[in-house]
Length: 208
Image (cartoon, rainbow, N blue to C red; front, side, top):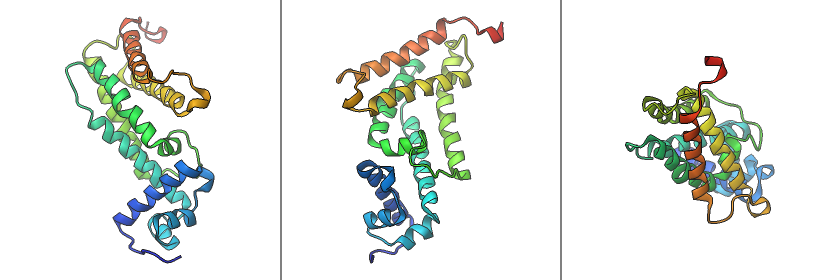
């Protein structure tokens, strides 16, 4: 079809946004080079020029996800209460982000849609996001609140908690687990329980 052929950063952003809309409204099976080009009002050649292939486009979607995750962590203020900061990242940032970009979350974290060929840029972006999380957990470590864990171990457990909450929230009404209206309190209590467990539990058997 005809349309814009301006292969620049603006077109790239438009194509990524178009791909995300297709994933949200039609699902991963509907994602194709032709469909994304049509949704963005440009040509398939633009997609191939910018992303090389459908797999390259999916890779770009994952990169966008990890960049956004890093952004929401960075923009969540640090206070003198590192435990509450973790709760705020969960409730005020990750929960909102996962709902606003559920399709990207499924592509990058759950591998829905397949064809994710992780480029060096994607690997680096994911590592930066993980480091952002770890830096927040190190504040607990410095405060003596990680009796039984290293910051790296706590980061894995914190991410697992968040991923579980996201999965529950993305199920929708069909498999409703957390009652409507109590989601924020549930997420916050979950984080506080995890932090309390770290502070109270003895060293693991491997460290005795």
